[in-house]
Length: 92
Image 1 (cartoon, rainbow, N blue to C red):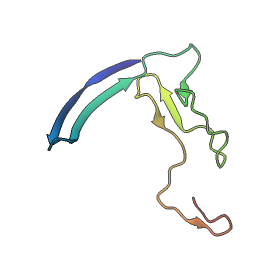
Image 2 (image 1 turned 90 degrees about the vertical axis):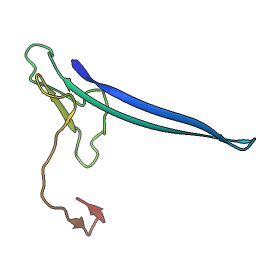
Image 3 (image 1 turned 90 degrees about the horizontal axis):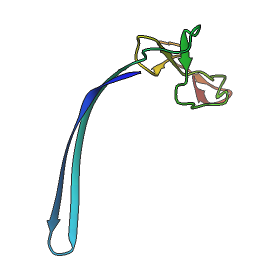
């Protein structure tokens, strides 16, 4: 895997009066990564990092990482609308 990017952080710690202290922080980052190789005979890796949903609503695989592409691209059904299932009261 190849990672490139940078992170910029600014922090401020202040005091108001004798007994009150506070801190404020701002962080900005940009990162690009690319999968450079995987086991021979394999086209992609699923759920990189080992996270498992155990068949949550029939959905075991939610990311795929292909060689030459970003790591952890979301994978699944694509839809241009949603509906409410009246029986289960779930948004699908």
